Length: 159
Figure (tube, rainbow, N blue to C red):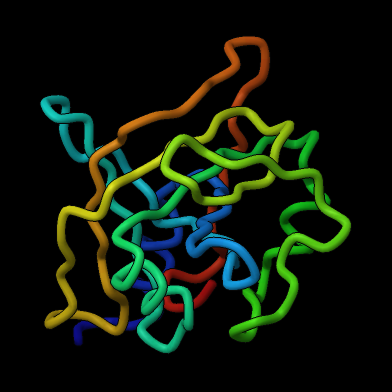
């Protein structure tokens, strides 16, 4: 690799949003912070989200074939801290958090800028330390009176 520090600084300049990725149902419902989310198609409407391979939520997405992405803003800062590290399997991810069920049955934190209910289309896992899940957006809601939060990392090699 040419100059790791220079590459890290350049990667850190790629802006993203801040999101909560949720999956599972009932007591299995869980969530984690995600910053690598992007719309990937129009017909059908699709998004992609990158998840570190060690995260337990990845197996739930595969098994349930569904997930939800919640878009955060500055008014929902408490959700950043709550979901930052993710949760161990079976831990109560939504304790003390206002939530709702998306049209695909996945719980998500409510009162945010937007949410996207997704049906898993596929995944790419062979070329990185993250798995990229692609999903068709089958439902959702967005507010036009609030702006999504923009996030820039300090270093392109870590969160």
